[in-house]
Image (tube, rainbow, N blue to C red; front, side, top):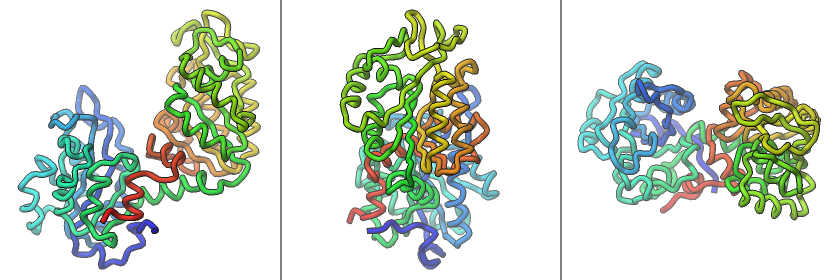
Length: 399
């Protein structure tokens, strides 16, 4: 059964009706001031909000989580800064409720004023993460139809992304514009990607990404590995890695992957930028081995040339994870050069995962990529499994 996207429904499904919309407004707040330090997730939600307003929605009930309050109200994780930001962006009042189940919400819905209502942090209620059907029923009771535009939380089976769907007719359940954008983009790397297909995986622990590595090895032509992810593979092949970040459990996983028939697709660093510590003076190795007392903190120039060649040949490229300690200038060359190579590619380029997205933003090249996913862990799980609990609920309903 197909997902119904918001921009494909008839006007009568929206005009004069109340909507409840699950968004991902989980923005970082400055610890000192409590103000929003990066509003990109809110900005990404604005197209869906404006679409509903422009198409005559009567009342717009927005909901999201923020932080990890563990089922208890916490003023430091209130959505109040988000409400203020939304009001400024939309140029109209946004009413923040005292809680997601506040008795006053029904009163607000009956008034001719205050068109936009933002429910206080969903995770102030333990029922949200428990996927509680009664809590979901209360949320559903605020509206005539439901929109999920929180792709970043679609891998969670929570009340606002999953159980709530069971309290609406399938004909009143829609995916928002951001979810549509994410699914269409990710499907280009999961459903018959154009060849050659190159995957790039960096970051730290193999344990966190073993499933995505195994999945990618089934479809890519080359899998380029960098960052701390590379050292367990190198050690598994008998190379010296010095004091580089390298857990024995990850070495075992790397050995398992290298025994696979598809392991020939894996490309590993040929040289490294090393130092005695992350604060140390950078040096470049002349080969694969890292001397005792030194740690790998970036990929070297020979590796960059090797990876550049594979990238230039590719028609589809998926990148997840930095090539080194890119937050430190001395060890940022590999990651930022890789971003530059991808920005010049004629193929389809998709970036997913928090650190990769952060690196692309810092590189100043973010507009040069085909798609930069907002989904983080949800993006990786979608690539691995081809769907997510929240997406499945949109596709099939729960009734």
